[in-house]
Image (cartoon, rainbow over all chains, first blue to last red):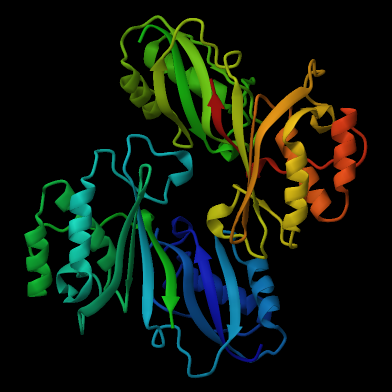
Length: 247
Length: 247
């Protein structure tokens, strides 16, 4: 499998110290690069579509790498990688792509899902995979805030300062949906891109509003001014899933 | 909460050595009895609707116990128990019941679910929760075998010898459904009762048939004769979930 290869990847974020390579930390990027090196002998660099923080999960993260070897067909490369990767990190698909493809710069959109378990008892299977909120959230308010996110806005007020000084903070959210199934609330956001911790700040703000600690007009103001100020709540990483990267 | 109390319980079977109390083993019954003792000071016995083996999960196992204390209202008892239980074992509901209620003898039916991941790669979130079969299963054959299970049969040929010498091995399966969602096959069985390892043997037989290692007429024969013989395959515990006990 010579040339540029696209990987679609799934992982349980609780098992790793986030995406980005770090010295002496168990990161997803490091795991993938070590696996590629082990099976091909090549010191390949794996470029992700974007970083995910510690605890954030992925069903369809994307990455690319360049290989010199032609030892592996796409399915064989996937099998070989999965054989050496930990089971909490899986390569779902390998695909030959043109040399102009770039996992980050070719992406035209991302889909994120955030799950809240809004009930008194957290079922064992949901541990580490949801934000558990025991007091009843007002679903109507959640929906009212969510609908404000849709469209093109300056999301500077919904970005964590920890990231790089944000160049352009205008983003377009194309889809913003909320579904309830029993105690489980699922928020799905699709957009052309998301700032650092933006999804978790958007969800945290929805929860603050539904608890009466902020109002919809506070949200409108923050969106309109394109700046921070006021209460901020970053929803826990465990509830967040990178579902898909669109190209 | 004096008197007889019914508990509805969920657990991740991978965390425990099955339901039944055993010396020096981490069982669900032992965990519950220790929790009751810790919060009430009473050495209560917890009676389950039935045993589940190591690795088998529950979304709605049921049990009952008798308490002398009137210290706890039902919701407070639930909260107190969950505060001392491991997070992989949760009490979903506590309910006062009449002294004639018995978790095992009052049960009129049970619902089990069995999940098979039939695809090349097992997503991280499904680990320990499905039977992973990489080679494509023939869904039509799975359905053909499953439909034979419905109704009243002598299931002696689908019981593990490890159980007690089965008194009456005639059972009625009221519902037998198969759903596919992507790579995930979900088999749901509802019946008046199930013999030891019966669900896992029924599923194992479906898989043997869909792999051409048994035929539907072998299954019919085994059901008709009410006896064993021929190939037997016990599906792995990880795929099995006790969904509900009906009273």
